[in-house]
Length: 263
Length: 304
Image 1: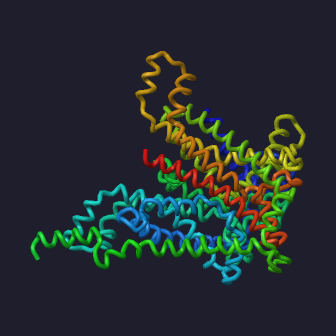
Image 2: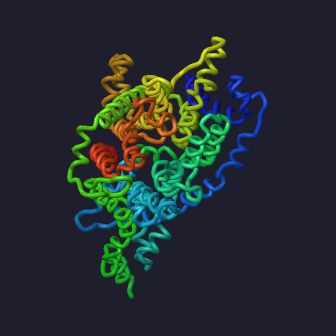
Image 3: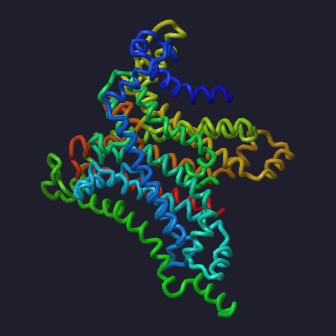
């Protein structure tokens, strides 16, 4: 049973990895799961004839900037919702309203996003992508961090404030360190979602100077329709960063993937 | 200052007085401004654009509600909606059944769940574009995995998946099942493991069989989790885009043209931004209703 599940999950990926190390002659003439002679030619061809290096750089910059922005903004907002009584009872419903943004799939607002980006000259720029991804992520950060902050007893901050520190000092010194595991889990999930996002990046960027890895990989395989070796190599290169990242942090993943529905 | 006075000052700060009274709103401001600028403003802008007629990517005048009326007379829209519905129902049903089955099988075997969690996480975190590439390599009629397997077992013969409408559609469903059954499994497994043990023991003592225990105990108790999982998956499947874009681009014909692909093509391939926006905003309403429902389910789940 276990074996069957593992085979079904892993064989497709193994086939892609195998294909990426075959020469194109071997791919077409000799049908086997695994290469007879390993070759890195598909990879060297990719790096020579395309902009893969640049795609990596773009993905890295856009991902880290937007995750950072959303963590800072989102944590502050979440803290406010978790600790204060607000006008109109915002602390009760605003978190859920914001969560709706996360659940709303990008495809339903991608056309307006494109038109607005066009209007403000944000097409083909890191800034445009960073803004959009920050907004998508922040909604998730608020939702996750609010529940983490609520789990921290309020007495600890009050004790610290009684000792004379300000609200924000108490937040920085007491609350944030206690919520660190939650912050990590949230950041991890935001990184994965942002790195994988395709549609918004596809619509907002059209030159290698700002395209992210998924967009780069998709334009590449449209161009090289029957170069199976290069296609497989592009797939592997696009997948490696996120798989390595996820395996390192896999313990923290499940809660994020299920929007906190499962703890 | 005496200790008592200091305590009172601290208390007051904790409850919010003076400058501290606006602090909560200052903390919320960056997030709300960002969402206003990047989500609400574009939606409002989009609603305005949806009343305009575009030619070659430029607005050429207002057409009132025509873009929305066009939805009802556009056979391609109806077709895309039908394909999407078929896709969602088929994929989510298979994923739920498989995920629940697997979760029930392994809920009590700890070593399995540890390995399974590690491996099963892979399909759902791999970039969707890459999943598309993986399945193109599997389905390729000349060099693909299926053709390879058939050649290894039967000596010869190609397997054609993406050339015919019905098989391409099923191929897409298979991709979705491969990618997302693990999520169903993980949510339901966590749900199962959080259930109390006593009712099951009581039912066993009463002599109930596996099937009765499942129907009378497991299913009712698991229902909230099941509902959240199905709702999340339905929304996601309803707007699947990336994998189709790489695998078939909606073809052959319109057999895999989901509503998201049709909306994308309308707006960006044929530059009918007005009609494209009208279409996707209408879809957004459906999704929003589903999302609101999901949030309520999660909320109930979080409370209980």
